[in-house]
Amino acid sequence: MVCVLALFLFPILLTESFSAAGEDPVPPCPPQWLLFGQRCFAFFPVWSSWSSANSLCSQTGSHLVSLHTPEEKQILLKLANTSTHVWLGGFRVQQNNSWFWSDGAPFRISGWTNQMRGKRKEGGVCMEMDPKSGDLHSAPCGELRFYICSIKVSSVDLPIRRKQVEPGIVPGVSLFDVMWSRSDVLAEEILLSSSFLAKLQSGHMPERCYTNYIQQEALYMHQVSSTLEVLIGGLQESNDMNSLLRDTFKQYSCRNQSIPPPLPPQWLQFSLQSFHSLVLEEPVYWLVALSARAWLRSFLAEEVLLQSKPGPQLMSGVDSSYWEWIRHSLQEVAWTHRFKVVIEENQDKMDMFKAINIFREHMMNQKSFYKAVDCGVDDEG
Image 1 (cartoon, one colour):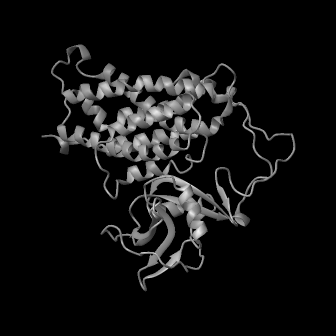
Image 2 (cartoon, rainbow, N blue to C red; image 1 turned 45 degrees about the vertical axis):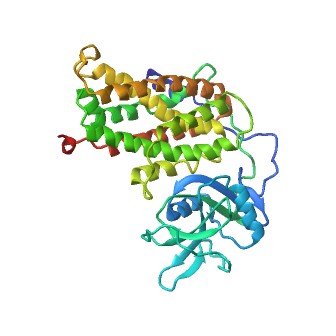
Image 3 (cartoon, rainbow, N blue to C red; image 1 turned 120 degrees about the horizontal axis):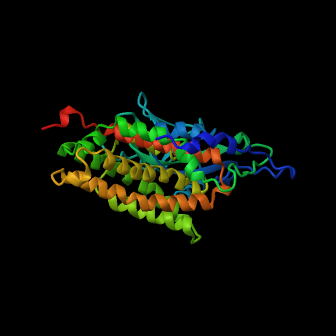
């Protein structure tokens, strides 16, 4: 389904411009990073392996954090407002069991336990921190943790002028509709390529296929809900945006019934890593990301109902899984409306191009999710 609105997208885009009011003072750290000594620190409640976390840090010119003084440890404990263990920059070289920091700093830390948590050693051994006690442990590098990045103040590359967000849409046009118009073809691709959705439309859903779907969805919601828990923990105001974020967290939390494995599937790891560029943004951009799943589910429910064979009025003998999926999906209609209202109320404060890209990236995450739910012929029987 290609929205007619897409035809009018380019005429309504306006260019962003720098403020002409002169140069603002340049801060020593990027936005949302904490300055301590000669370094800037940022906590990312994003599930990643150690190597992926270090790679994500490097995208901002930083590294996984190295630790040198008790005062720095206190800063890290202040930053990491979570019960989830977090990656630091320490890693062990297997040849001689020596430890190093990923930023190249000398490894002179002493008095830590160096005790392995867990039994899996594939992918090497790296350093994690308990954010409650401050205890440091070695852990399998391939497992998923949150992480902390740091960068030297002298290495921070900041623009001379602060970029001011200018309205990107003609008054009266919905940013939410524009975001969808840029991703509706992607939604059609998901509908046409998903073997799971094809089984739903046929009215005959193999039990193993539906179980696979429920398990994959629970994995996604469990991991994202833990990120949301950290993010909303820092919200102070009481407004519609924060209320929607808290309600979304409750929805995600009540749907994750399974315990995630130490090494979730690759599609999920990539989906979770997409939150790296999001968690330090304004909360409205979190809503943009979360709205992609809700909008897609309501769209798919409508299309599945329309295209089901036989029609819904004749489907008394269809598998119960069909009706369970439809019921849960139609509940997303109310969520979609709430997302739409809040995003439209705040669209004049947003970077339109950033919002479009975030929405599309999380739609791509959903495409990976539906592709991972394989309901081919092997599931029959």
